[in-house]
Amino acid sequence: MPGEPAYVIGVDYGTLSGRAVVARVGDGAILGSAVHPYAHAVMEAELTAGPAADAGNPVRLDPDWALQVPQDYVDVLKVAVPAALEQARTEHGVQPDQVIGIGTDFTACTMVPTTAEGTPLNEVPEFADRPHAYVKLWKHHAAQPHADRINELAHERDESWIRRYGGLISSEWEFAKGLQLLEEDREVYDAMEHWVEAADWIVWQLCGSYVRNACTAGYKGILQDGAYPSPDFLTALNPDFAGFVTDKLEHPIGQLGHAAGTLTAEAAGWTGLPEGIAVAVGNVDAHVTAPAAAAVQPGQLVAIMGTSTCHVMNGDTLAEVPGMCGVVDGGILEGLWGYEAGQSGVGDIFGWFVEHGVPASYHERAQERGISTHELLTELAAEQEVGEHGLVALDWHSGNRSVLVDHELSGLVLGQTLATRAEDIYRALLEATAFGTRVIVEAFTSSGVPVTEFIVAGGLLKNALLMQIYSDVTRLPLSTIATDQGPALGSAIHAAVAAGAYPDVRAAADAMGKVDRAVYTPDEERAQAYDRLFAEYQQLHDHFGRGGNDVMRRLRALRREARARTAGARTEEAPV
Image (cartoon, rainbow, N blue to C red; front, side):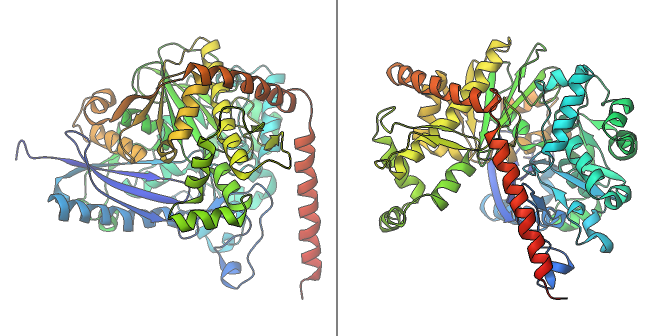
């Protein structure tokens, strides 16, 4: 009946789990949500899937690998979507036949090698124990040597597209990972018919159509001005890589907010949704969050802060920003240039330190008070004046995405003494991530793409100390998304547009997006103190990242060599 409320589903695929929400089309209110963790999580040390793992002898992985199992993504549709629908039904009376569309987003660049029909190669029996047959997650950094070769050749040949990516492409992206696959497991590479972004693969499962989304194609697939890197360029990398684009990668492009197709009967059975509703073109978790935060104007930089941080911003002009992850026409909204930058480790760094660097007494104190160790350390760190700990850190524990684009770099804490305590290091790590963001903001601004507002989404916005540090360090007003379901709401917004409820994403964002403006503002006294610390950070940043000091790379190489010797010794000692 006319005037009846309509609803949409948004599904956000994160690093460890998938979240589904039910959103009201009229105002974006979230009426139901559910989370389903991936059964295999992230496989970094060994394959926990496949016959060898089932037999108790899992295949070991080299350093810097990060793999996933695609069936875990389908399970989110089977578990989280029905659970979110059930909550919306019981608490708000929402019925499945009132749902008009579904949208999804994914971490990127996350790649699935498939057959022509879309079957992941790890599900092909002969490849079930082959690491290269599995999903390469965004934080799979083992293709860094391949990325280095791509970058060197691009500059040697003066390829115009390299400037659209700040002069460097990442080991996380489609071409580097594809080249690694070719050169390390030719049999799997030859069997692969499609090299598919997970963002597009899950849409394929929902609607039965493979549509390549404009966002990942531009940012992660080096599609610029309608063209990929040329066959001549690919041949120069490796003659057997010449047909990578035409044979494995190229596919029709779908624009963001458009419909990729309609929900199949099989997917309707998984989800409990009506067959035939609109399925939106796939998207990336960071980029889809901008409309959810009502950030649809140039200059509004959205930072999605979780295990890592992705920074996205619209601009009305094209500029080449050193070290950015890319600039893509329509990469966030049609009609604007979408800019992306990022930090490979943020929440992951804080989590690593709490797990491995904090004395037991801190954990015990936190437990006695019924709070997390993160909360305890934040309280203690908040008591300090800027610079009181005497430390400065580099936030490169997972490499550097922007502006150096080098995943061989590593973390550093300078200034430790016998008086240094856990809360000192914790605060220095918080500050280091803020300094890394300031480098990105200054790179944009100095390149003619000024940042006027800093908007934070993601789980880390709950840490008030961290948010104030970011505002003080960047000297920007800091707004926060007014929902804890940012990416999922963004996907729901795109679903509403794909279903025809709004004419475009801007209109949908105006109605459904949620943001609290200027929640934090910079304090000038603290900002001046941070200027001095940032100057030290910059010196370390340039010394280890740009100054020709390769100690971090050499240490990584030593680690790989030692791991290889250890793996060889285990193989020799294994019983026949």
